[in-house]
Image (cartoon, rainbow, N blue to C red):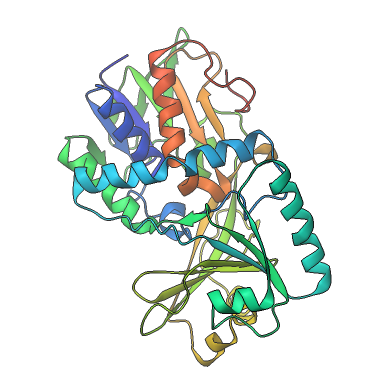
Length: 363
């Protein structure tokens, strides 16, 4: 189904899908975004690629996240060759620290679970952690190290994907909100904004927290606000992403340290709050008390798209032969972008379900 493909939503998922479809020979691809491409949840993210750090157990969703994480080295390499943009894939690994015997007991249990499934993980005592991170809190009693959980500079990833689109004549239409989609005889025929119409042979809905507003999907996607703060150090002083039970800090190559994040059901209300910033500061300074001497120099928020059962919705839309959905990635949009792009592109080329039961509300 090559030609005249309309992608509604220009976040990391929409941009990655456009790239993958183009690489497979599809032409006349248009991305339409209600604002500026990549400036919503994708821009606000922390960029962690950490399925092991974020999961206490396995299952289909964990497998999906791990599979996508493992695509990142090649994905980053290809983007650098295609666009000249280094997305700063950082493979130093992730620490998860404990501040009490109770927390440490839980991490030991997770260690046994991960080891039992053949996953790579190390159990560390407090001295081990301080050797790896000299600025860690002296109150840390131990933790886990996940060498295969990484991070990406998500804003540079957006820039790279956008540059790929521009270099390859993928049309990007911004500040254009689709408010109606017409269907006829089981197919989408066109999408309409206030002052423009788009005819299409196929359509992909990936408008994040706004996907349900397009009227075709029944995934129950709701926005969840996540606030973030950012410190700046003169040089990079942390080598790893560092989690605790209350949040995480993410060190960037240029000395920035991101700290996040909140999870708030406040509808489509964006912005940061004094309470949110205070909570994030307390969490970050617990992990590393040296941050207490600094004032965060930046803060922001994004609206994560959360679907029923926190499973992303990826596949064909039931009852429509030419309509697809890729939404509801919640906290894992950056992590799942390359695999989501592959899964949607696969569905363009074949009529059967690639991964049954892994994607809710689709066939």
